[in-house]
Amino acid sequence: MRAVVRPAHVLKGIKTAISLSTLSALIFAGPVVAEEGPSAIAQRYVNKIQAKVKSQWALYAPNLPVAEKTPSVIFVISAQGKVQNPHISKSSGNHEVDAKAVECVSKAGPFDPVPAAITETGDVALDMELRINRLPESQRKAADQRNAIIERAKSLVSEGKLEEGLSLLEQAHKDKPDEIEFSKNLADIYYDQAQMLLLKDPKSNKAIEYADRAFKLDPDNKAAKEIVDKHEIVRYDEKQFTEQK
Image (tube, rainbow, N blue to C red; front, side, top):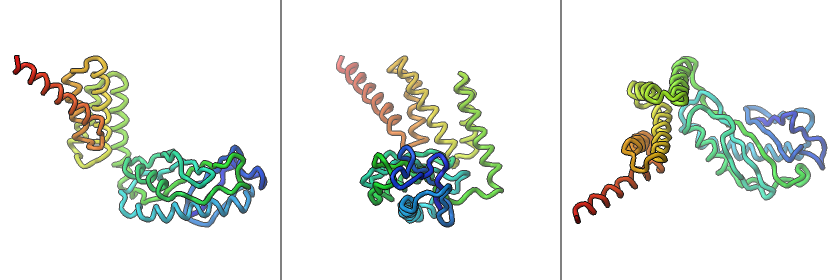
């Protein structure tokens, strides 16, 4: 792995080592390369961080699906070395890979305390790229086609053409039911529509239907499940009330 310190965050001296208390590092294969002469202290610190991240990522990468792009995670290291607010700065194009990249950085910490000589405020922010297997060239065309369908569907929905957008993604999901990106994005649209309908009518049957579809496609969407469960409770209470009459 190698860390490249970008020009915008060049280390200009021991006491003002990191401009704006920020050090941007990209993780690649190879030795450390520091642009425009960053301090040896900063180099050593980044080396330790990337070594821990690389070691942790080695536990994840073999079990991850191939991805079109390399994910990048941006996070803050507190003065005490704790990882704070890790999140994706550049998506791999795969939800599972992105989630694991963030989890990897979180578990790689805590790191050593930030050396006082390289920061003015005590903490630093890093943007790290975690490499995994890329899609073989033969599969890139299929991936591009899939992404084009998803983007077109989203565009149609944003233009107010909900049925067209849903129809496009539903057909894609029907043709390739194992394609996670189709099911995930379709579930997201169902859930968003359910929320919008419930704002207009808390008892909207169509909203419940959309929420139910969203949860079946994406079991991790607990909010969609809560909508369905709440509706079932209301229906049960109403039935009980009617029978008591």
